[in-house]
Length: 108
Length: 122
Image (cartoon, rainbow over all chains, first blue to last red; front, side, top):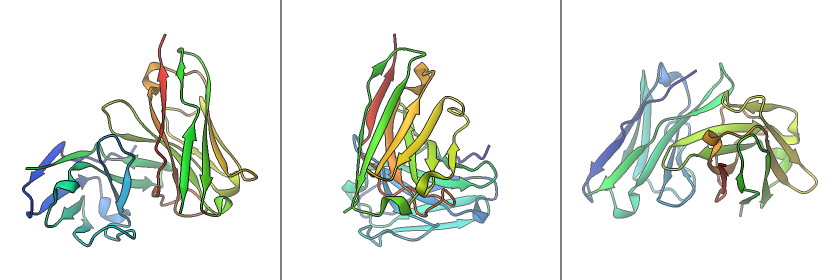
């Protein structure tokens, strides 16, 4: 089955840029979606199809996807961005959705 | 506004059964696939199952195939997850989530409900 690998943790100071990676075999050929989950809350979609933002998600959130790595970039990090972030793809071969293991973003 | 409200979570013994429900409102329920995603305590997200609009196609994670059955009732805009032969490793918060299209393809999940806790323990 398809596997997505994320770093367990990433940190950034307020105002700086945080980058969270998601690695998978030829992930550049798939559409990658990203969610954040604040403590005790349900996940929220923050990017879909690699780099599109749902309504209400600030422009500070951007994404890219090429080769074996997709990246979520959060510019001008704020305290409220502190959360767990998950990448996700649809694996057409197995007809299953796959999540990465999650990355905890700490705002210093 | 789209709203999803899960219910049915409970403490159940290993080998037991449970049915979860997800009441949907704020959108044309029959036009969208629906999904279940779970999260074990302190762990990451795991997709469990999806069902196409009108219920013609169902999809399952390998970990629940043959034990769980997803269904939907278009007349009262409700999604269900029937869980049998429950194991300790099925302990998790179960979220329902709306899909992007009528079928479960190239799926993403938006929005999510608040979840319902299933605990499998003797």
